Length: 322
Image (cartoon, rainbow, N blue to C red; front, side, top):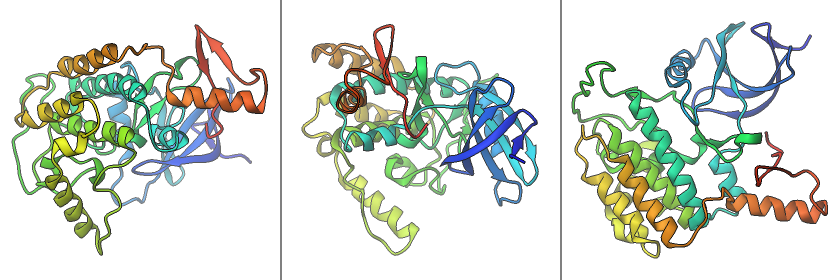
């Protein structure tokens, strides 16, 4: 008997892991449509899936937010059924030999700032901004960036009064140390500025191929976090962004100039990158580095263009890991 979820979905092979729980490929039994199914053992020490499902409901309808199809308990598992999405930006970064062009990074930055802004507009912080938590869509939405994994998200203000949470110190690091903001390393309560600073590190990671505080060795997790923090503090914004357009340094200076409860000027950040994009003479045609690479590979494998679908002038591919 094949495993079923909510009497509506067939459980398939494992396709990944989130911050909490495993992710499987699933199929809607009636429509044959493929979905993503996230499972979390009900005996887990810190259950997150119910909380995450509530977050997705709050964010539902936003551009680049996956739809929740079903949430419930099945046997020993909490189960969240969602839209199936394409590869993560970490997958695509690896596919492109761990370097992305300025054009691709700027096209991504525009959408990623929009996603973070939308989450903030709903009174939540993401608190784990990293390449693995941004996915491309599938089919007609292959060029759309999605933001996922809200297990660590936190409400930063009252939804109706917009009263901001209080400033606090001595907080443990929440999220991924590699992309954590300076203030997060210093134990300061996170706010909107920190999600944006983390996003800046993600963009530099894509451009540079790595960050200066990667690969540091330490005995314990705590010692490793301290080493990352020390390296981050001792790396100036200018050194981090050396050799790349000054807009990236401007982005960091702006994020770090924000006070704890300031509302960031998202439009300003998008504008500096859009102006750079235009100045470089790029076309916002959604032709990313992986689009070209995948096309070249398919040409070599199946001349002339088998396995490629062109819709509205854009090229879409079927990814082997989807």
